[in-house]
Image 1 (cartoon, rainbow, N blue to C red):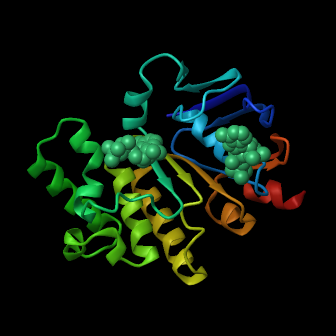
Image 2: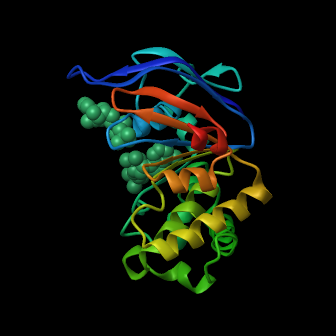
Length: 228
Ligand code: ADP
Ligand code: ADP
């Protein structure tokens, strides 16, 4: 799926302009990384794709269709979403966390859990971890579960907001490798947010550098961006 930001601006009710006139197209099957300092509008940009935030003006289009047309809850169910600290539901087992979206979509429990078990393997975790609760996992394992939960949406689009920022550097590298490996198999359209330029360059097919005030400062391949 392509994701197009068409002259998108977000001004929050308090007057803060978080994103200012953003136009770019995330091509199908690629990873685009939004990078820049804290407060430059990365998360806001990401959240306008799944309508957790609505633009003040402009539009976000998925395969040419304005995301504003239609039911936001349905839209979200069809878009994988991974956040920092995984955002797992603490009172659900790992398996039931991963099964969340299939269950919401009406799958029966058994089928949803079977699928969740497969996804645990996909992200490199042993199936025994499925019975545990999130607090019984390491930070890196929790992030893997977060990725598995997002993959369960079985959607062409994956939104990742600082998914690896809270884990230590060695684990982070493993997670980055894993994401690249997965992506080479799955070919999703991924929008990834980070404040870490090294991570952006490592993961991005395209890198969008934002600056405080919400303007796009640079956009291109990692080598384009590094040259400037
Ligand atoms: P980043 O992800 O790059 O850190 P954000 O998109 O979170 O940036 O925030 C961009 C700007 O918008 C910041 O100045 C932030 O304080 C502000 N902001 C974010 N969310 C809200 C909100 N709900 N209300 C008001 N201002 C907000
Ligand atoms: P519960 O059913 O336990 O109340 P929700 O489905 O309301 O859980 O999700 C809880 C939080 O998880 C929400 O605040 C939302 O930010 C986040 N979330 C989970 N899945 C998605 C998704 N696909 N898109 C956006 N946010 C999501």
